[in-house]
Image 1 (cartoon, one colour):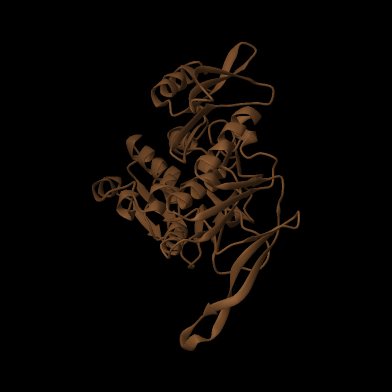
Image 2 (spheres, helix red, strand yellow; image 1 turned 120 degrees about the horizontal axis):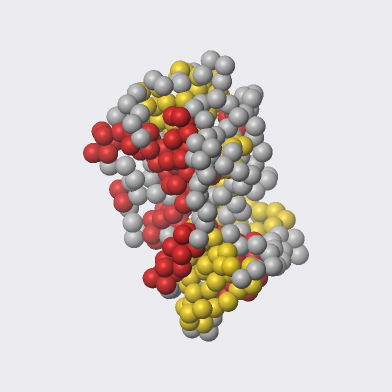
Length: 399
């Protein structure tokens, strides 16, 4: 194999490039990225970067020394627009093509937006440019902010905005946020954190429409756009808003694969080793549906690439992924950490601390076995429990 192309200058893409070199690939390595930046750390975008505690240089994941060691050809600021598998060619949006022997798909996911017109003052938060734009508006003084979506991104962003002195309301369509991830009991606790931060949480109602008026002015004072002024809910209420932040999930970035024979269904379909049905094509991270599961977790992006690359270089599946999902969230001064796979019907047992203290370690259990662990402000006990959970999983099966 003389050339391998990593499509996606993401966290997963960077780990794939590292794995290629560490596993002995010494051929041409090409990294294609839609953004003009080398890979950067996304979790701080909704936290320390938004509040001004971290700057852009602190987000960098690949310094100059490592960049030189990787000896990669970086094609940044140009997205991929297609994959010609018969000619083993990656097609770029600017008309260029990259002939390659192997492909690692690491294009990640795209945030869901609201249907309808686009108004000034409405923000998504997924990329560095998204975070820059929002941070600039938050610096303009106290604002009335409505966050649509009570998941982790929405909650973290609401927490950051409240810490900066803004008036914040979170709207969640479900009766309670985070139930799919944490279950009802623990989700109830996390919902209560909004009160700690003096943030209003409205659940059980969706968004009917955004209100806007022509207030954006251009050169000479002439109006040329519309800015958001409020959020109309499905129950008829109207929430005044100077800014709206949309955090209603993400979808895998697979549109560029339209027309290719790759199987796509809520992500690129892969076996348990990140290998697709097409020869010499693997997928990793948020875009990959591995063994029937697509997991938008940091551990997936960092642990899948080593397995995927090993299988890519071998030309077949020789190893399978053994990842125990892990994520964390910082909200209103609390560090929330979760590892494992919770299912409906699991029972939850507090093994350290208490809900009343606001600091605890909880085990999710099924048939006498621990399936997941949740820690709130218990970092050391949580990490011990996470290691135990990881060690209890089955070893990878060689094929």
